[in-house]
Length: 244
Ligand SMILES: *[C@@H]1O[C@H](CO)[C@@H](O)[C@H](O)[C@H]1NC(C)=O
Ligand SMILES: *[C@@H]1O[C@H](CO)[C@@H](O)[C@H](O)[C@H]1NC(C)=O
Image 1 (cartoon, rainbow, N blue to C red):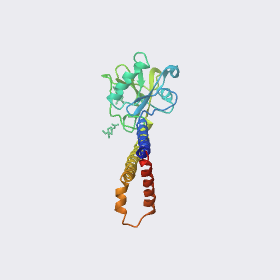
Image 2: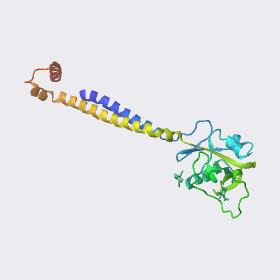
Image 3: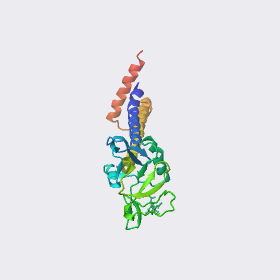
Image 4: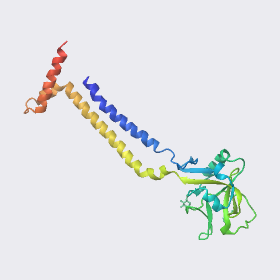
């Protein structure tokens, strides 16, 4: 009877630790903007493919297209995997080939293209083109062909029918680092606490079971009030036990 009552708090503490672990896991799921639009998570980023009602006019200059992202950046492509993701997802929102604006611009300081957000252009996927482009450097924008994944230089100001994809980093990734260390420490502390409490409860339980042997060892020491109280409990328990 006594042991059943003692285990109850241990079970409760373990379920607390489990609940904490479950919360840790859910904190790691995709955290894309909740602005009522469809954001698709891929790796540590989120993508919104502008289509349908949002995309009525369809032909914009690059600046108009960029404004459709409502403060988010237009698509940047930093790897072949990300390039493939855009090719693979496009058919779900657009029919046929769409040329998607890339969020890059000509930077006169480096005399070359640069992503918005200042990261260098490491990965490129230019289409083979022997003809030198006659675009003025400052009027050079880039589109990705959603069927082949190849990139093409186009004019920023020409109103052509291009697709818009907006992109942002997942919020969870940004803020996770510090709290994750804190939460891990919390989990470890809880486990240690639960183990400590279990040990104390076990010890108390053992002391009740083998109380008489422990008390014999204490017999020659000055008696504590606590021991006296415990002994009277034991006597009571023995009395009730012996009663049929
Ligand atoms: C791009 O390359 C530079 C130098 O080669 C490197 O320092 C940087 O980390 C790279 N950036 C990305 C996003 O891979
Ligand atoms: C597109 O323009 C950029 C900047 O002028 C240039 O670096 C790049 O080679 C061009 N790509 C093609 C395929 O012409």
